[in-house]
Length: 108
Image 1 (tube, one colour):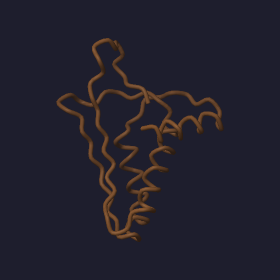
Image 2 (image 1 turned 90 degrees about the vertical axis):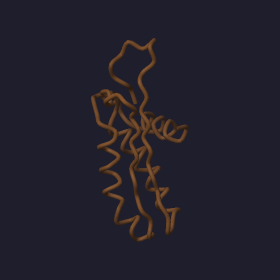
Image 3 (image 1 turned 135 degrees about the horizontal axis):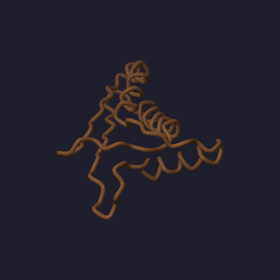
């Protein structure tokens, strides 16, 4: 998580202020894995996505999708580069917001 936060901090510092919008993290990660599949195949590495959401449907997510894409793409890309003859699994685990939170959307 710290690596993701570091990448996001660098993105925010180097870029202009991005507007927060609703987005779908599992769909974004699936698209990134699809794009990186040829690179992984060259390393004889399998890519997988595991989404753990519990008993409740996924809530709405608010954030800056370009920053999320860059962070996940960099992490998965590096994992693929340094994994030969193996498997890279991205696990997304979603939990209900705490009772103190009155928001119906989660922020990235």
